[in-house]
Length: 141
Image 1: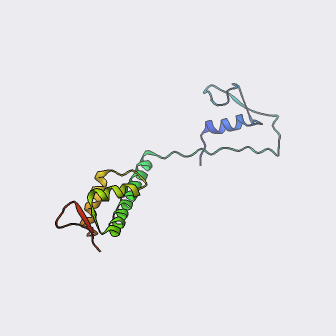
Image 2: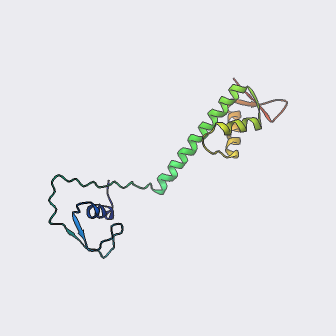
Image 3: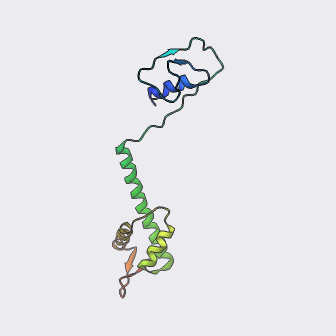
């Protein structure tokens, strides 16, 4: 892992026993025209200098890929919860199913995603619409 030069310089010059001497006294900011010199008097063999690790930032592509994977995983969670709720109740009204699903889910889900997942489960024959009332779903064993 690579440390940024500024982070390394800040660590080496801002510790209790600095290895680098600075021309300016401000600890938090490093100026572009600032000059660092080696601290000749530093000879503490027992003192350790901890260089903090800076977290690598995720690239935009990696972040987008992560978000897509999370969305896909959430779709599976929605499917599993719908099937579990329907298995428990056998027959359930659309609004009752949606209300119970939203109480069970631990993440915010959009209504349109839930409707798509219900349609997908109907196509895959996990759930079916009632013959008499289209707003009622029944669990297909």
